[in-house]
Length: 165
Image 1 (cartoon, rainbow, N blue to C red):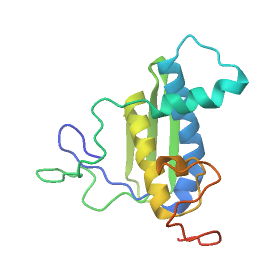
Image 2: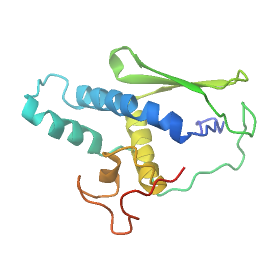
Image 3: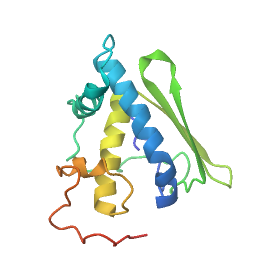
């Protein structure tokens, strides 16, 4: 992650960490997105999933996922070595739809990121895309990031039974 002040914070997300963090993070982002896009609505159960997906798929102003990550002229407050966390915390921060995500590693380094609804939705999209490429078999919703319908597999998929660590 690069801040507007050109500070770079790098975190290794292992399969174990993503396995534990993905579902709660996706649920929190979904709740925040629905609350932000349709604050006064109460969806009937039949329409809830469609409303949640529409909120997650909304355009994100200023997000350019095709732009390469830039590290020139960057500083590294935690050092150049990425954080390798063994624990993470996820909390809602008030009514503004903000989420706080904190990572800690055994040797004491930690990072806390307070994200707007827009930033957390963008991070979820990046995570969904990374899970498709990683082929970890963790997130059924990640297949939608590649434009694949639930129950289908991408054309270049290795098929069932192949897990990469």
